[in-house]
Length: 154
Image (tube, rainbow, N blue to C red; front, side, top):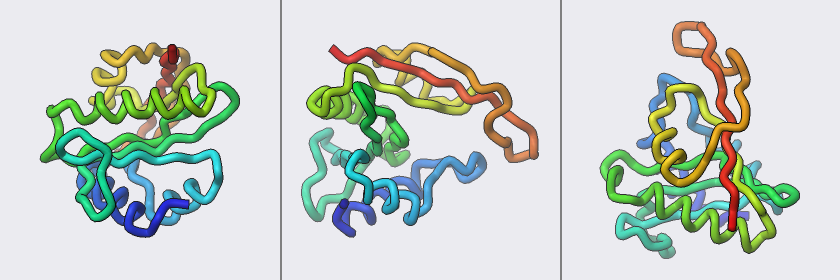
């Protein structure tokens, strides 16, 4: 289980990073519940691109879940003031390394169509493997597709 301070840092980044229009941010209970299981992992990054040390402000984070030979990226966020500095790529590099160490052979993720993070994921090597038509609700009560991606490790 994550230390309370680490969950605090995750929540601080999440509050600044996710546009509330889309409802993609998790609440504290969701994060704590995910981390209570032994197969969920998190990574905190500093503004300098190194793992955030105890007591240091986190500029970004990832939350992932390990399955048989796969690791699913559940959340990745970088605070707006630290974007475009390569931190997202550094988080993905750390995830790939950690996931490989846990036996994963590929990374998975899902996002809404039109998510601006898609360019980061594509540049990292993620490729689309599926689509769920009209999976997410839009702010105007419409629907938008979910896209699923994979990235091979190794």
